[in-house]
Image (cartoon, rainbow over all chains, first blue to last red; front, side):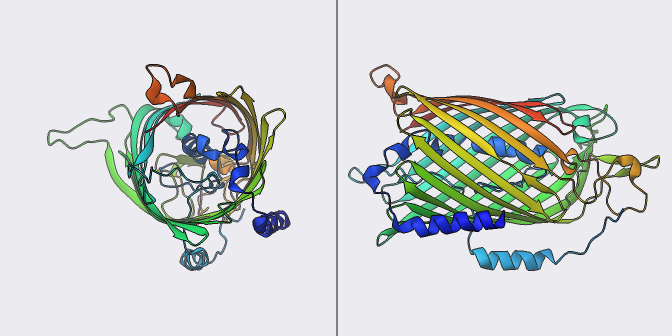
Length: 69
Length: 397
């Protein structure tokens, strides 16, 4: 798992120079590729998972602070 | 069974992580340029979201309406406000108590955030802060945080870091036949007062990277380190014929590593997202969490989403069947979240862009969207199967 994570991070960082030009990003703005369209539904789902599962966090959102320990 | 194990000081862990990360989490969002106000007219812009959330399982119902407001100024300042109310109706057997009593609680949560983006040559740096208060009759949770977001290569690379501090006050209310009774002096007889507090730090570091015009990836690391009262005052365990309060360790360091890959197939207007999270904490609870999401565009207005999520966790090192606990055990628990189990989730969502209303009396909704989702959770834990239903109306202005 650690090797996969490090490889993914290296891939992401090393590809920074291969910039996708702003005018090539039409597809990335579509609802299927733009996470802004899921911004408000994600916290409640994470709250449910935090209160019903032993794990927390992930995808840049940390849990806690809700009395669901 | 041994239930005690040495572990490093949580304060030392927190200090190291704080130094290493420097700043805290904001969450991986899209790589598209942030919506900015009209610089020519100098007006602010924003988005208002009305969200409905519903959760159902055999012993619990949750209704949670939510209001979310985002504002952006022409010079790069953004302000966010979120308010959510949880109305929870539950049989307390869901929390693992010996006596089953049905009760209803209301939780209020408010979050405020503010940030500003600065131009650094060809890069952009956003600095932000947020605060949150969650109140329910037996629990007060407060949190503060800072976050930094660095955008590079015309926003093809976005790196975010954040750190937050939480402080919770934990109380207990009597949930028996006379719950809510008031004495002649106006005191609530069922309020058993404060039973403990909890402090902690949340920290996160994430990166999102565009790889091609159809492909992006992201990865993040999250830490939640807490110290204080980590059990539930409502859960008790029958230990050799004697009812004792649940006892958990008073420290916990939780680590999550996650990744996401999104690819869009242009010919069929289909997108696939692969998500994976792995989790580990110092209670020896480990979990994996793979998920796949399939998006399909129908015309210009509708996007459908199907998702499947699998979750599996191991048990905490001190968790065992109640009949095996001994009076001398330092930790006893019947918390279903501490057991080993797995969950499958299937979900469906429909998103409709409301641009087609531009020439109608509802033209103010044009540019906004409406979504409806439904998830069924096949939970292997004692909570049983569950349903999540959500709907949202997003209105830009």
